[in-house]
Image 1: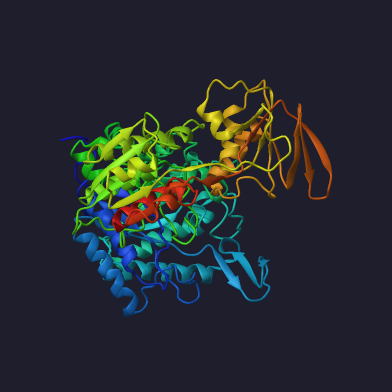
Image 2: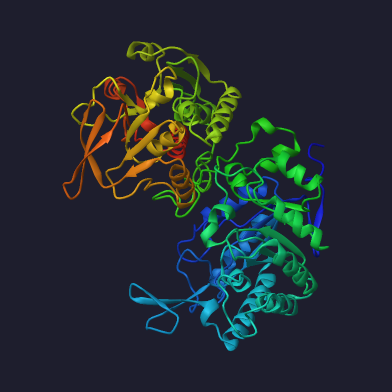
Length: 638
């Protein structure tokens, strides 16, 4: 057996788990009416089918309507809501996995009038519960949460995970930074842990002493004056004594989310040291979490006794079948997470919600189904970037005859360039997986050939897919054609370019700022000029903060709300919104102001072939996730 440590049974309380892999909470926010829908069912079904031992599910509203967050939040206070949850649990159980419900309570109270301790936000006042909670409030919330645990057991959840991390309510009570109370719930460590201890005892009393309860504990807030292992190892011992069956060792708070949800800027296993320390302090199982991104790392964590279980979420979003593939030793078949948080964090993708940049099926399982074709067709695909490769894979898997043309000598397209930016090694892995996957199909790949209209027609295709990518927008700026002005893609493509010491980058989006990070050296002065009021407007908050901090530390200047009037010898002339003009020293200028599709073949082919489609940047420039989803959709349509 491959990875014998992670594929051994384990127990959390009375709950027997078939292996040591847990899918930690990933709030999909797919519900639109507080009910389970097909999209949620299919998402969880795929993860349960992939071989994970347990899935932690989001907490339904425990206190409706008082603490109701809206239609994305599940309810289970009435039969027409709870029946859907039962169906979800049956789906998970039917595929050999267990399901725990996270137990949580909103950290804020919202009022329609001014109250002491509240801040006005629009037409309402919001107050942190940690500040305004009375002893009576505490007792009421304890009763609500413990009854929620009892309700979870009645519905069929296999256990409870108490949320005491992420800067949520209970973790705020634990933290000396946020908890300034002077009553029995504030002050010394025992008082700050009192609510959590009372909750554990109440849950065991309401739901049954044999009902498994684990705690997701913030073990280090990574901020001065916050919780550290010195205190949290003691908290871990206190909650063990109070009936806790396992501890998931998390870290960070709302101010240090970069540690809670590690991006591509942080190394794998970022929080494993927390699990190691907690495990030394307690006798109950400990669960490690935090960018545990490969079976090899998970095996190492268990083998070295840093933890008893390993939790992962994004790795299973990228590839739900990671556990099954790992157990069979099929490591090359695993699609690895890129950890850039582009499509899976915050609200995800506009119009789609939470998705995945490397797995186009994530969140779309309910509508993306690979089914055999009823009529085999000959499909010609032009362009061997990610969209072209993905369209080839899907069309071929369904039974079509596929020919893929790529003008360069290797597949990859813009992924070959994207992987050159700092900390973007995940793009290399994404390309490896795509190339591996197309290699397992019958697709005929023709490299080094810029295909012509005549060549396409000579194949007598039933369908043509153009995945011909995009080119950089050329700004309409006087001086843009100077010899010292470069397209950003050319900078990545040609290592022979000799850039100067004073570099101005036009465009403060993802590519512009990542290029500034790539080129910044002690001997270079780099200035990024951005027309909008802030840089990186489309980047999710965690990687955005990471990248801006890196640029600041490197001394990269970022000028916002500013347009470029002209490019002249040794300078770029800019103008802000007040009309103030400024010369910025420049011996090299790079423009990174967006892309436009390359799809000139489309109109030529429109009347000559029965079916023609545009995918990826050839249809609309976007990120890797958008390219893969558009290619998948067309591959399933033909």
